[in-house]
View 1 (spheres, rainbow, N blue to C red):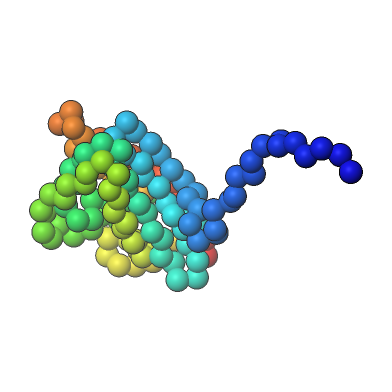
View 2 (spheres, helix red, strand yellow):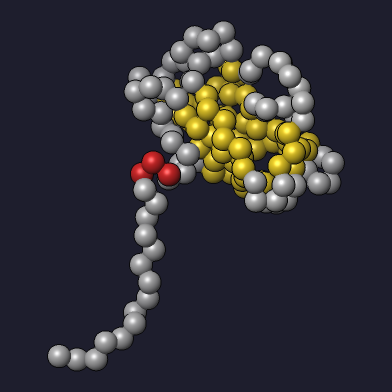
Length: 134
């Protein structure tokens, strides 16, 4: 029969739909891809989470670059109202995996970048890798 002894806790894995694949951290924020690589719908959700108060330049402050560093996606400059995120707040950005003209990007490796202003009033950029399949 024996004596029961505690040997540790098992950390439960996050459900597949909530796993973050690529994540980059700074002292101000975490930038992650929630559902990379994209599925058949070729959409991904990226999340910026404030570890300290930050200011986003607009409501969609991201761009995508290819392996050569060329910007392949940059949203149209529409309403450039700053978005303030308090400590612990997050914002999800959904990208359709298209270029700036709305055309599907070819298979390959890309980087999704976000830029914001930290509490030290300096601009900070974070990037996460994104792989686009067929």
